[in-house]
Image 1 (cartoon, rainbow, N blue to C red):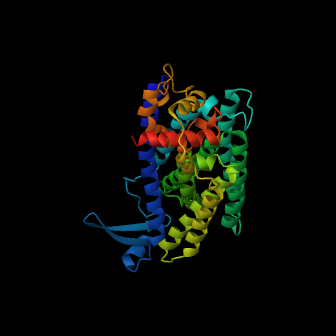
Image 2 (cartoon, helix red, strand yellow; image 1 turned 180 degrees about the vertical axis):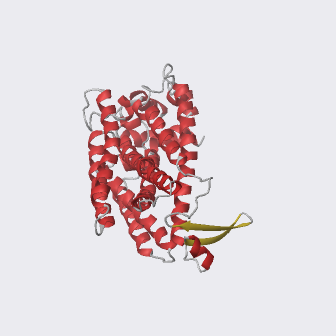
Image 3 (cartoon, helix red, strand yellow; image 1 turned 90 degrees about the vertical axis):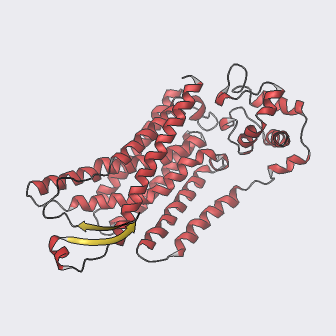
Amino acid sequence: MDAYLLDWANLLLRWLHLITGIAWIGASFYFVWLDNHLVKPTADELRAKGVNGELWAVHGGGFYNAQKYMVAPKALPEGLHWFYWESYWTWISGFALFVVLYLAQAETMLIDPKVYAWGSSWAAIVAALVYLAAGWVVYDVICRVFGQRAQGDLIVGGLVFVYVIVAAWIACQLFVGRAAFLLTGAMLATIMSANVLMVIIPGQRRTVAALRSGVAPDPIHPKRAKQRSVHNTYFTLPVLFAMISNHYASAYNAPSNWLVLVAIMLAGALIRQFFIARHFGRTEWRWWLLGGGLIIAVAVALAPDRPMSQASLTPPTLAEAQAIVEARCLACHNAQVQSKNVALHTPELLEQHARGALQQVSSRLMPINNSTGMTEDERARLVAWLRRAAQR
């Protein structure tokens, strides 16, 4: 695909993904908050109608009275609002973005021979798709086999956590770190959307159909929907980290990058637990301390031995900087190939793009996946020159 069109596809799909993701996560967080703030009604007429919990709220100049029925009101209204398109479009736009950014550029974005020598890009693409599908299959089997047992929530939570650890390790053994982080997050996001598509919405449809037919609905459907909805809220912060991790090479290029991924995703789930406890009026700072402590521990473990800024004391000459760029950057930024509309094949262009190049090189985002083998000494010297050039 033409690089210019690829950039536009990237931009528009990323924008759509953010919009739909905000809508889905916002609705999900709101209903978890609402469900945990409901109080038993005191009015006899509400209890007679089957209201199990209610909440009064004020927003935007108006007052709202939310009521929850278990399992449903005696007479269903004709107009029912269903929350599912937010989930579906978030997954669709995210998968399309994954195709454009990673699958369509598998040789660069998915494969690193130093990590795993795939026979072909198609083998890596198929493996990535199987990885996404397998996540849902394993998770769903765990929920169906253990979810309804005594202490089922704890068993399911423990087994899912173990599976995420194993899946993160596998991804980091097969794919370049950037893609491995994204794939693990996408696997959890696929589970979240599949929960809506395969469990929550079908269960609600069966409940509605039974009520409209005058048949008592099976209570297993709302129970199972609530369980999957709770799982989704714990997955949310880990998924968000995985989605933004591709901007932070120090995380996905770490020697034991799968441990970094698991630790920060666990931190996200623990922090989410703090907010869920707050819904019930409990301030349990231990969850913040555990989650924050994990993040601090990872940051300390990944701290470089020698800050790159020390290289700025002896910046190289333009000729030395050009030599590094020619060896490590010109494959993608030359007169014929101008990735991201950036060319660096002349001194004038190198100076013109110094500020942007500084951001990319110092953060280790470029060369992408370090495919050209830039050494740490070369990176430090180039950053020193770029820093000085960016200030001119």
